[in-house]
Image 1 (cartoon, rainbow, N blue to C red):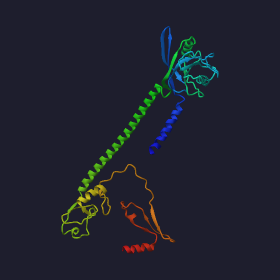
Image 2 (image 1 turned 90 degrees about the horizontal axis):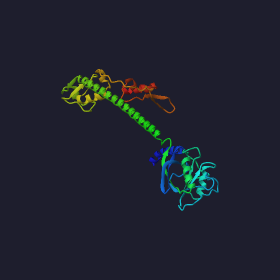
Image 3 (image 1 turned 180 degrees about the vertical axis):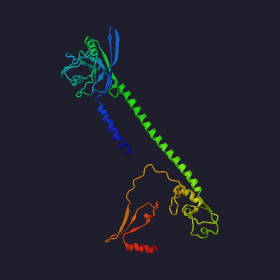
Image 4 (image 1 turned 135 degrees about the horizontal axis):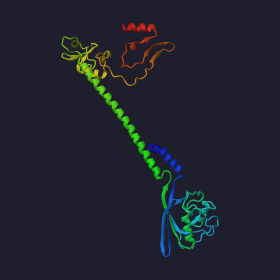
Length: 360
């Protein structure tokens, strides 16, 4: 169901293109004639016809038949002479004096397999894409005047001419070779531009990632050297840290034992050497007091490319029904330590005194 919904806009767009291009797209017709002249069979074939706009684009064949009287085949009483025993026949009429639909319907009513309209005098072998909206369901093509007059003369003189009308090639602005070349070039240009753009973006991203990775590696290398300069201690049985279970490493949460090697930070807090070194490379700060140890050692963090705009500090106000706000607590990030922000600001002095007394 989801795929059908995705295809629906594409199909609607495609149907719109087909509908809009129907008026400019046309099919040529291959015209083949055979007749006997001086005991010799003459065969001619050319892609010189054009299917009408309302004509089925299919094959048709039969003996060429002329209308009696007016060669234009107009009127409701147009009668075609049938001197051949060949069952299928094609009407040959001249353009002019009435609409294309009238000519085609007159032949269609009498059982013609197709209608061939040849152009007016003086047009040589030029043709047009004729419209006959009121006469459909029968093959109808137009040929040039010179070709049509030649066939008309042969039939008029008693020569039996057999004709085959076949489907030729599509023509129109989107079928022309010139347009195909333009579309092909445009397609390759757009494709090449897209590939170049994405290649540039990818290369730029890879370059930035490599630069950041090199900076990170350099910073980590300097941090390792700085951490190696921190003083180390090997705990003894007489040390305060080993004599009491209250002293423990804040990283691994284990008590200190005799022989443990500890690192003394710039804030004078101690931790297991194997625990604190990975911690400082990742967190930079003391696990207990949040002091920036790396900055104290001269290792500054790389500045970010863009810093977010600092938003106003949010506070939560706790109220009692029927009374004023008791206190407000800033909503800060627990991982960022700021002694001033960690203090609660009380609006009630009595509550503040009780709290200070409780802490005392």
